[in-house]
Length: 311
Image (cartoon, rainbow, N blue to C red; front, top):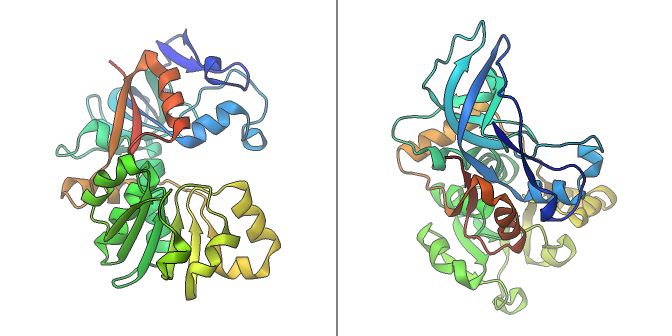
């Protein structure tokens, strides 16, 4: 089988496709033939070496946190799945960039027949992170005023929908090229982030969801209502540092670290099945085009999620 590896940190040319033996699932594990592999910003940061403190320096590494596919073999003791089942795969931080993957039975979720494989592949990282931000960290309810940055990306597009589903008033900021797509998701107001002047808007928000990773709390705090809070859904170093050193930031700024679980993914699959949630997929690349997929992810130009298609 083919797998995508990096042998050291660096630019996109570090991504190489190699042939490795097809794994055999041990007891309690399943073998899945991937159909779609999701590309996440973390994958690019990890490949660049910016997440070395989590990833370490042992190579080769196989990146990728999530995928969808079909079970082709089950190990001894597996009772919940069988050959032919369509499943979402939760890989943790790495390992999905392969034609086949082996994971414990507890790390896959059956996909309802009404849900497409490509839609299912978008849910474990961006979907559950946005859900946690809206429902757990921010406790968004009807009538709450929410500002979402990076609304045209995978995280932001989910955050817009989850906020809309509970009846929040959503102001969404994104690139001009993504405005129509974000408006179709139900945002109350959508603007080009380059042209929208927060100072001149005269508005404050009860919740600011930073899905861009670049909004500084020092700039955003003046746009929060009295009891408002900012959630760094895609936290950059600035957000993490400010929360650690500032007592005021600790009260108003919350940093979210994703924790995908099978239960959360099942909940989101149900929303997709009943058409309450629409995964936004910007582009699909063939497996061989991993370099181009990473380049697009780094550019920030993709609308929604980027996927690798495994033929």
